[in-house]
Image 1 (cartoon, rainbow, N blue to C red):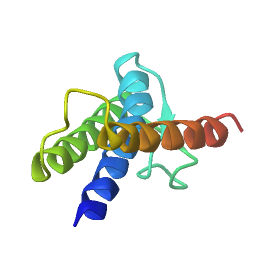
Image 2: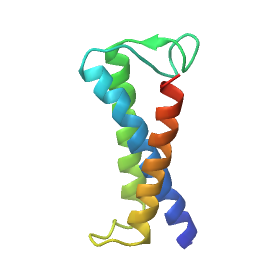
Image 3: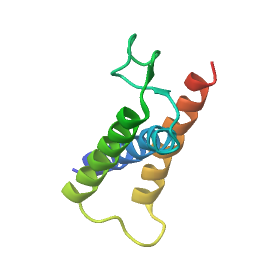
Image 4: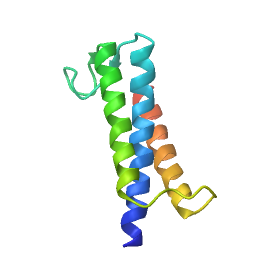
Length: 99
């Protein structure tokens, strides 16, 4: 069952990374693509939609953390896998949104 925890940690990092740009763009009043735009993921969505979408990503990340054992305070495989999910998703988003 340890591998399920690691998958959950990776997904948590991915949801955190995806939530950041949407939340920041929304709070700063900027348009930004969301899955709710037309066409999905390409068209621009209103700032409020981005704040809500970013917040939804943060909530999912929190639920994933709450459903598994707590993240240790010291560096561990759990923290490394969570960070890997965050960095992998952030890098992917950077490539997609730079186009």
